[in-house]
Length: 562
Image 1 (cartoon, rainbow, N blue to C red):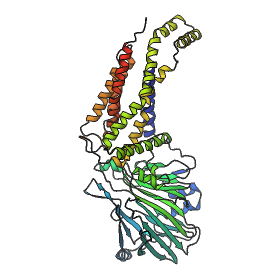
Image 2: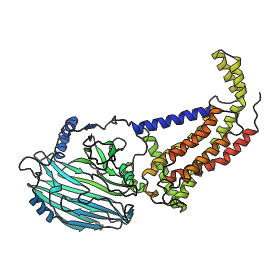
Image 3: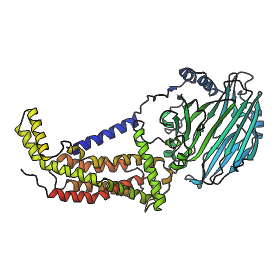
Image 4: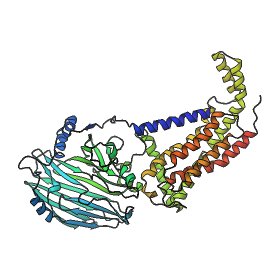
């Protein structure tokens, strides 16, 4: 009975997971209105607010009415403007920041501690010919594309020694000032403070900040890295959400209304995000849109954020760096949820478990001074040891059920009336002091480690701490085993567990079939998964073999009568 229950439960989980992956729910969460349209004006009408209408106007064609500063420039004007462009470089221990006077925006952030695997050079989050951020200013009478404005620059230091780059410009009697405070701490917070002031503009005024359209691939598997490209955002009163580029059709727009704490673009291991002040005004809304495609893999998209000016000022933070879990936690504002672990319907359960698993692995790595490979082995063994008492209890309940089986069968044959049959069966359970649900609890030892396994499945997708970590013949535990040794070893160890578990047990064709099918199925599922995930599961299976052998010996001493 417990085998059938376990099989049904596991297959149900597989069906639910596959269904959610193939057919994700399109229903918005409470407090977040999502409007998808191929017409920007329709999206603005769906929100019904002036802010959305002005944002749609700012994101439409740059050709405007005469007198607007957003009018497309001639080739001569563009050439003259390019001659004025100046690049300011700020070098700190962990990163190199570059800013352009054209648009007063950061154009590059080089992460000095991580190498791009498509070339032997540090990871650069910028793209040639593009800026990391782009600004537009919307007033009741005008739309100003700041990315086309040449700013004057100044550079100084704060009392704490932080570098400050300030840009100023005057456009149609509107003064704009944008300053960047670059962190110089050796720990490398990667958080840059942005402050600005707009004078002479009518109210209400809005700043539209556009995020990068893409991030250059940093892994050897460039296609796989592109497939992880996504925009993430955090509604102030809801869980964070992530939208893969592949989920946005070309030209399709998604308007996310309501206050937002942050919006970010990310690939597998790196992220660029803009965060509203921890104690200040939140962002008003964000617009996501699919970009053109030249292949099945979506490589570009667009995202912009609306920030209403208060007292002619705006402020936000920019994080441009690695997705190191502890570093993201220190940023606050739930920015460590930039990768929401678990499918939407399981995020509230899986994400806390995944976060605790990461914290535990990092703690063991630093405390024991061991590589992450051995840490995963120890974790697998510890999980099995922690479950040992429960396994003993449930397995002994299963043995008592085995003893009662002849009596239960006799009661079923003796009484044909359902009521009398049920009463007789309950009497057998009562006299033996066994719960009728003992058979169902027998699957608990196998089910309890599953949340950690699911959590590790998500953890290995983007935990940069595992990137490039070698272990024995493996050169990187974050990618699949190139020799497929670990997946096969995991399948063999799982089969041994099933085989030992069936020894001295009553014949059960369904359990026997399960003993063969389940190891094969798990081997196929984990074949191309991260080798560290297979390492953890293999260690857990091997650690469970002695207990399974002892229980098989104990079962051999019990011979059901009749």
